[in-house]
Amino acid sequence: VRGAPQSNGRPSPVFRARLDHAVTLYRAGDAPVVLVTGGIGRRDTLSEAAVGARYLTDRGLPAAAVVALPAGADTYASLAEVGGWFRGRGSRRVLLVSDAFHLLRLRVLAARLALEPYTSPAPDSPITANRRRHLAYVAAEGVKVPLTWLFQR
Image 1 (tube, rainbow, N blue to C red):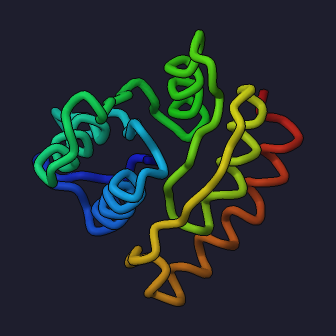
Image 2 (image 1 turned 60 degrees about the horizontal axis):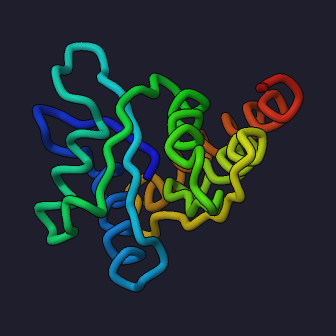
């Protein structure tokens, strides 16, 4: 689960949508473990990953099935942390959860990190519900994806 802002230990609506989708996927048997990424933002004392992990266990996921990966300060660093978690394991298959606009860039980065990426967008994201906001994110990704494909190693 790609991190998103949190405030005083409470996930933002965008982060909650991603986490709630991860709960659904876990309960459906689509993922045996949920990795939550996200570092500590400015003026925060908790990482997005820690807040997300607590949110998931509060919703009934077993603590053994939830892993917080708080080292990532950006998308690449977060996925590199996920790649590190997979090191030495038999499978490199990862189901990436984020907002739909973000998934292509996540797939490009995950493949560069020798992961086998699959994606699942958070269906109830407030970003998707807000047409103007969603289009702004899509436009930004329209620039970021080609740059990522060309330059991110």
